[in-house]
Amino acid sequence: MNLNKIILNDWQSFRGEHTVNIPTGLVRVTGLNRDNQGANSNRSGKTSLLNAIVGALYNKTPLVATTSKLINRRANYGSVGVYFNDNSGIIRHLKHPKHGNSVFLNEKQITQDELERFLGMGFDAFVSTIFFGTNYSDFLEKILRKPADAKELLTSLLPDLKIFDNAWEWTKKRIKECEENLQNIGLESMELQGKISSLED
Image (cartoon, rainbow, N blue to C red; front, side):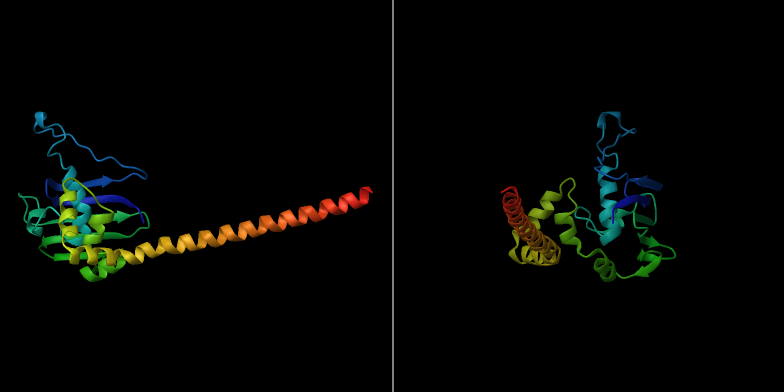
């Protein structure tokens, strides 16, 4: 499941609706502040775009304490949608006149718990392992400073780490099978050489 599109509607610095298509492969997020030429790429919406991904999935971001601050300051409500290459999509509404504060998965309204089960991890695990942006290292440091928080984070990651354990076990088994096959081939080769030698005599 790879991210391929973000649709922002009055989300943080993005006024109105904006669609950002995400190409496959490594993506570099940069920007140009046309309102303030001296700012270069500062305040051009890079962090707002990254926050949109986390906000859509978890209704919060590491750097914004309240969801009302995720809405553009000139708007009354906002939304963000993230779409993936498997045709799934998540839309988060904030203070929407019809939907209120809600989240939809594939056009069906669900709870945050249901969404996190679909994603396979909670907010802290996502931010600490998949998503790193500007100033997010401070957030990670705060989590790991408390042993209880660090334990909770690591515990939430264990199911994902089990995948690597299973892959390693499968790899070791395949290596052993290949070594046994090579040994059998070596024995068969010696046997054939013996038969050839006896025929030559």
